[in-house]
Image (cartoon, rainbow, N blue to C red; front, side):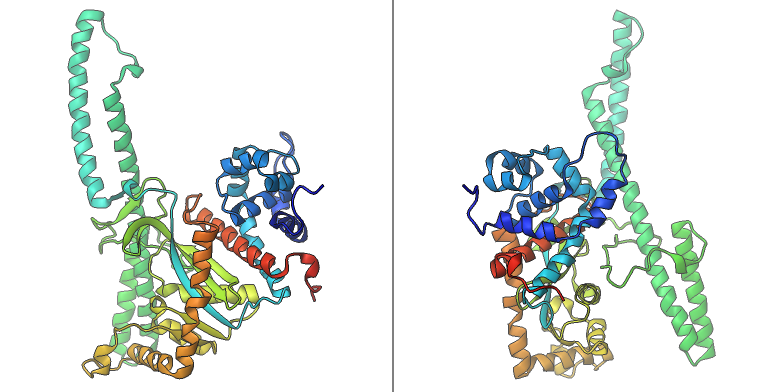
Length: 477
């Protein structure tokens, strides 16, 4: 008698995992010291995690318990019961390799006839971080708290000295370290945490200001090379040198900035920069979370939350064809790297792109024109003064105005109207049906890998409902 009915999702997951190449993951395991506890099968662990995310079981403790109580999990684990710490360690250590399975699943979707390019929609959604917004503190408050706690610690130490003197008179001299008052230990620990977060925030602000100066220097160098006015060329070169010198002072480096790690690949999304003064100091409102320093306070539906900005490009078959996570709330600078990820994953750019007003800017419009990508990006209402003739028509405003006119056409209205039926349901399915509304891991890199697993499982569910079994797929060609 079968434990599960024929055509169950668990059997489909087993089929898919048997089809996938886990060479990267297996090589990483083989590089470990072979002595010690025999590891569980990486395919079994992968199947457990993929099925868990697909059915909304994200906690490693719940996955372990399910290997005892849930028939589907017992089938997947083959009667094994890995400890929850083993499951969590496997997920944390092999997150990038598990996330990389996304591309292989995407190829299976293509073989099944599900559309991956054509008309795609790009959007972002705020997903809760594994941290509380109440554990975040601004730089201004850190400085105030540091002063207050230092004062309280000094008072407690003075009080402790007085008590020690009285007790020494009664019991003799000497006090053990563990006799330190609990109240003093608590304040001392909090002071150390605030001081550590304050130093980290200052370092990030200094690096952010240095990166900003280097960007200015690059533009000034270009102006020095292209300007026809010799005086302006000299001034631009001087300004560039000063910006580079100031950046070197802030970062403590005087080497060539061309080799700086700040030059990210085309598919890398921009990260949040700590607001800083001209001198590289954090502004008083710059914040840092003690639990997950990479996460940021963001707004979703008018509510402030500690979160990340998860991006997805979705095809007309509601297949996710590219994904990424950033800790920068605005979406404007994400369009180009996300389209490059589509190119990497699918071999080419889509034919049509639709996106909401969060992605509108001249650079994005020009990128789409250069790559012959038929883009429909909402403009919003910021160009009313241009239409009324109250503002001059600069190149940026002209690009936005042309996009506005394109969206007004019959074809533009028809194509942009499809956006809501392409990308919005996917976020609803992930957050409500799976349901995944909060990351389990912390840190931008680990969160990015977890979002990759979530997107991979979303596509697996679409593939399962489309074909039911990999045996029904045409041979890869």
